[in-house]
Length: 148
Image (cartoon, rainbow, N blue to C red; front, side, top):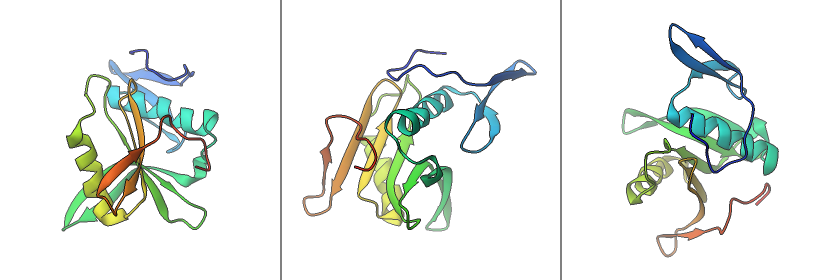
Protein backbone atom coordinates (compact mmCIF):
# COMPACT_ATOMS: atom_id res chain seq x y z
CA UNK A 1 0.00 0.00 0.00
CA UNK A 2 0.96 3.62 -0.46
CA UNK A 3 3.22 5.39 2.05
CA UNK A 4 1.14 8.04 3.81
CA UNK A 5 2.01 11.36 5.41
CA UNK A 6 1.66 9.66 8.81
CA UNK A 7 4.01 7.63 11.00
CA UNK A 8 4.46 4.02 9.84
CA UNK A 9 2.65 1.40 11.92
CA UNK A 10 2.59 -2.38 11.93
CA UNK A 11 -0.79 -3.92 11.18
CA UNK A 12 -2.15 -7.44 11.14
CA UNK A 13 -3.01 -8.13 7.51
CA UNK A 14 -4.32 -11.38 6.08
CA UNK A 15 -5.22 -12.63 2.63
CA UNK A 16 -8.32 -14.67 1.86
CA UNK A 17 -9.31 -15.66 -1.67
CA UNK A 18 -6.87 -13.14 -3.15
CA UNK A 19 -8.40 -10.32 -1.08
CA UNK A 20 -6.54 -8.44 1.67
CA UNK A 21 -7.99 -7.71 5.11
CA UNK A 22 -6.63 -5.55 7.92
CA UNK A 23 -7.37 -5.99 11.62
CA UNK A 24 -9.25 -3.02 13.00
CA UNK A 25 -8.41 -2.71 16.70
CA UNK A 26 -11.36 -0.35 17.28
CA UNK A 27 -13.96 -2.69 15.81
CA UNK A 28 -12.01 -5.79 16.93
CA UNK A 29 -12.35 -7.58 13.58
CA UNK A 30 -10.78 -7.86 10.16
CA UNK A 31 -12.12 -5.48 7.51
CA UNK A 32 -11.48 -5.22 3.79
CA UNK A 33 -8.22 -3.41 3.08
CA UNK A 34 -9.28 -0.65 0.72
CA UNK A 35 -7.22 2.50 0.14
CA UNK A 36 -9.63 4.47 2.37
CA UNK A 37 -9.35 1.81 5.10
CA UNK A 38 -5.54 2.06 4.90
CA UNK A 39 -5.88 5.79 5.63
CA UNK A 40 -8.42 5.19 8.44
CA UNK A 41 -6.25 2.62 10.20
CA UNK A 42 -3.17 4.82 10.07
CA UNK A 43 -4.97 7.97 11.10
CA UNK A 44 -6.80 6.38 14.04
CA UNK A 45 -3.49 4.93 15.28
CA UNK A 46 -1.92 8.38 14.86
CA UNK A 47 -4.70 10.00 16.90
CA UNK A 48 -4.55 7.39 19.67
CA UNK A 49 -0.79 6.79 19.88
CA UNK A 50 0.70 10.16 18.95
CA UNK A 51 -2.03 12.67 19.78
CA UNK A 52 -3.40 10.79 22.84
CA UNK A 53 -7.06 10.65 21.76
CA UNK A 54 -8.87 8.11 23.97
CA UNK A 55 -9.59 5.05 21.83
CA UNK A 56 -12.76 4.42 23.84
CA UNK A 57 -14.14 7.80 22.72
CA UNK A 58 -13.85 6.97 19.00
CA UNK A 59 -16.70 5.32 17.11
CA UNK A 60 -15.91 3.95 13.65
CA UNK A 61 -18.43 3.97 10.77
CA UNK A 62 -21.22 5.31 12.94
CA UNK A 63 -24.60 5.15 11.22
CA UNK A 64 -26.86 8.20 11.18
CA UNK A 65 -30.47 8.40 10.05
CA UNK A 66 -31.07 11.67 8.21
CA UNK A 67 -34.40 12.42 6.57
CA UNK A 68 -35.16 8.70 6.61
CA UNK A 69 -31.89 7.87 4.82
CA UNK A 70 -28.97 5.96 6.29
CA UNK A 71 -25.65 7.82 6.25
CA UNK A 72 -22.38 6.73 7.82
CA UNK A 73 -19.67 8.87 9.40
CA UNK A 74 -16.20 7.42 9.04
CA UNK A 75 -15.48 8.22 12.70
CA UNK A 76 -16.90 10.31 15.51
CA UNK A 77 -15.05 11.47 18.59
CA UNK A 78 -17.18 11.66 21.73
CA UNK A 79 -16.48 13.36 25.05
CA UNK A 80 -16.62 11.83 28.53
CA UNK A 81 -20.40 12.44 28.60
CA UNK A 82 -20.85 10.41 25.38
CA UNK A 83 -21.71 13.55 23.39
CA UNK A 84 -20.27 13.89 19.87
CA UNK A 85 -17.59 16.58 19.60
CA UNK A 86 -15.81 15.87 16.30
CA UNK A 87 -16.64 14.31 12.93
CA UNK A 88 -13.68 12.61 11.23
CA UNK A 89 -13.86 11.87 7.50
CA UNK A 90 -11.40 9.76 5.51
CA UNK A 91 -10.75 9.58 1.80
CA UNK A 92 -8.45 7.35 -0.22
CA UNK A 93 -5.03 8.90 -0.95
CA UNK A 94 -5.94 9.43 -4.63
CA UNK A 95 -9.09 11.39 -3.68
CA UNK A 96 -8.40 15.10 -3.28
CA UNK A 97 -9.92 16.93 -0.33
CA UNK A 98 -12.21 19.57 -1.78
CA UNK A 99 -15.04 21.84 -0.69
CA UNK A 100 -17.34 18.93 -1.52
CA UNK A 101 -15.62 16.91 1.23
CA UNK A 102 -16.27 19.66 3.77
CA UNK A 103 -19.86 19.91 2.52
CA UNK A 104 -20.30 16.16 3.10
CA UNK A 105 -19.16 16.55 6.71
CA UNK A 106 -21.37 19.63 7.12
CA UNK A 107 -24.38 17.50 6.12
CA UNK A 108 -23.53 15.02 8.89
CA UNK A 109 -23.19 17.96 11.23
CA UNK A 110 -26.81 19.02 10.70
CA UNK A 111 -27.57 15.92 12.79
CA UNK A 112 -24.60 15.80 15.19
CA UNK A 113 -24.02 19.54 15.79
CA UNK A 114 -20.33 19.21 16.70
CA UNK A 115 -17.80 22.03 16.88
CA UNK A 116 -14.89 20.25 15.14
CA UNK A 117 -14.19 18.49 11.83
CA UNK A 118 -11.12 16.48 10.89
CA UNK A 119 -10.51 15.30 7.32
CA UNK A 120 -7.64 13.25 5.88
CA UNK A 121 -6.75 11.37 2.73
CA UNK A 122 -3.54 10.17 4.36
CA UNK A 123 -1.47 12.75 2.50
CA UNK A 124 -3.28 15.93 3.52
CA UNK A 125 -4.90 16.44 6.93
CA UNK A 126 -7.24 19.19 8.04
CA UNK A 127 -8.70 19.97 11.43
CA UNK A 128 -11.02 22.88 11.95
CA UNK A 129 -13.44 24.43 14.35
CA UNK A 130 -16.86 25.28 12.99
CA UNK A 131 -17.57 28.97 13.44
CA UNK A 132 -21.38 29.12 13.42
CA UNK A 133 -21.44 32.91 13.85
CA UNK A 134 -19.57 33.52 10.57
CA UNK A 135 -20.61 30.26 8.85
CA UNK A 136 -17.00 29.33 8.14
CA UNK A 137 -14.15 27.13 9.40
CA UNK A 138 -11.23 28.14 11.60
CA UNK A 139 -8.36 25.83 10.66
CA UNK A 140 -5.75 24.50 13.08
CA UNK A 141 -2.16 24.73 11.85
CA UNK A 142 -1.70 21.04 12.77
CA UNK A 143 -3.72 18.16 14.16
CA UNK A 144 -4.18 19.04 17.85
CA UNK A 145 -3.33 16.71 20.69
CA UNK A 146 -6.07 15.60 23.04
CA UNK A 147 -7.59 17.42 24.84
CA UNK A 148 -7.77 20.27 22.35
